Image (cartoon, rainbow, N blue to C red; front, side, top):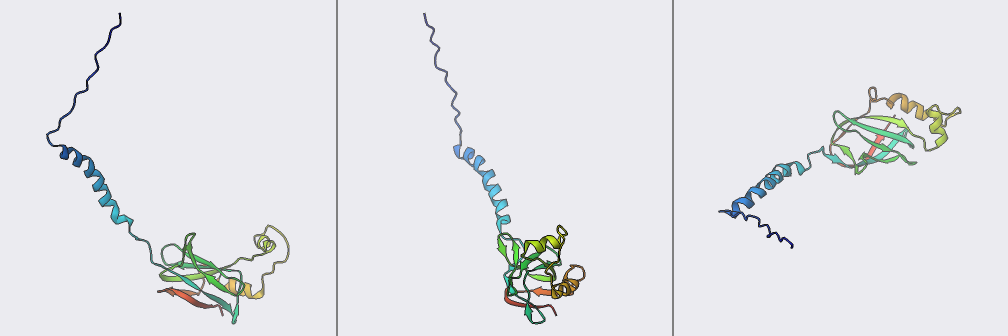
Length: 164
């Protein structure tokens, strides 16, 4: 003979005010949303596009890395092409430079792999670093001693940097 168990009945909660229960669940989510929304705004530094040309003795200079070092905050950088033109980068996803006064210091970054290895001391040989590049680096190659100060206050699309 089989014994059949009666179905288990679950007690049903009856609330006097069901809206009170719903609002007690929703309230914390609304509260969190309200306190996190203000932090969603752009609170970072003002970044503006900066591009231009680097010249030494009125000649465009290629293969230079320009480091725009603000008094505080993240630096930007740019590399000159064969015609001395550059476009500054703030980070991997944003072009530009922080609105501020910057010390600008320079590194030579040859495109030729052999020159790079010679410069890094990985290979022996004669580098193609010109006298002009050596003079530029002796004057502008250190962030502490570079005399080049540029104040960025607005977007610059034709900034001419003369390294005379």
